[in-house]
Each structure stands twice: as structure tokens, then as C-alpha cells.
Length: 140
Image 1 (cartoon, helix red, strand yellow):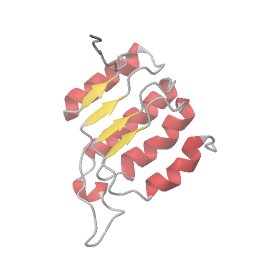
Image 2 (cartoon, helix red, strand yellow; image 1 turned 60 degrees about the vertical axis):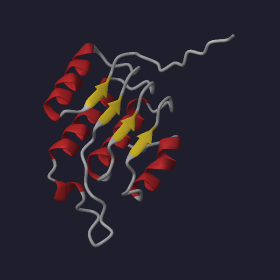
Image 3 (tube, rainbow, N blue to C red; image 1 turned 60 degrees about the horizontal axis):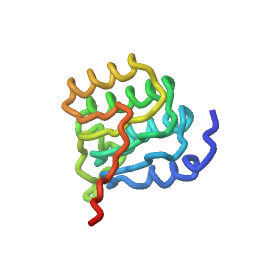
Image 4 (cartoon, helix red, strand yellow; image 1 turned 135 degrees about the vertical axis):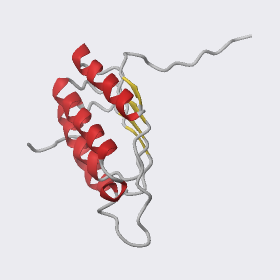
């Protein structure tokens, strides 16, 4: 399946960013197609990624399943596997994902439960509830 939209332009660049430790794609209209396109990169081509936000992107069950499989693959891969594409003295230290903000998407409670179990199994902070960040200011 051909990926279209902005994510199609971003993916080739992401594949070159082996030292990227944080990626925030919140509210970028990724939907299932975009989540499924990002998932292989998330699993295999992001050796130093520790934080990812794909919140509020209209992702449904298909995209949730792809992201779940990608996070599981990233967490269970041995460090040498996580950095297999980056050999030599400039190879980045391979790390595990620490936080994933997946809140506000369109999947069901079965998907939420699967992400909660994944978080418990691997010690990841995963946000899946429909919570938007907000700031409170006080006017005097």
C-alpha cells in the first residue's frame, strides 16, 4: 500500500535519523495509513528513540495493532539488533522506548487493554486515554 500525505515525505528523512531520541507527531492526521507506515520505522530503524507521541491522529484499530506490534518488537529486540543498521564507531547506543503518548485516537478498549499490558510487561509509560494537555493561567 502506497503511503500518501505528509508522512510519505517524512519517512525517508526519519530513516536517516538514527540518533533521534524523541518524535512528536501529535495531531498530524496520520490515521491508520500513517500509523502503519511509521510502525516499521518505530520497530527497527529508531535505535535511540525513547519518546514518541502519535496522539490525536485519528488512528483506529488497524493502526493501533501496527503500533502495538512495533513497540513490542522494539522492546524485545536485543540491543545489538536495535542498532544493527548502524555499525561502526558512530553507531548510536540502542535504547528502549520509555514513553509513548497515543491518547485521543479512535481505537476500542480492547486496544487500550493491549497497550496497558504492553506497558506493564516492558515498563513503558503509555498514554492511551483521551486526555488533551492544557495550561492554566491566572489573570490578575
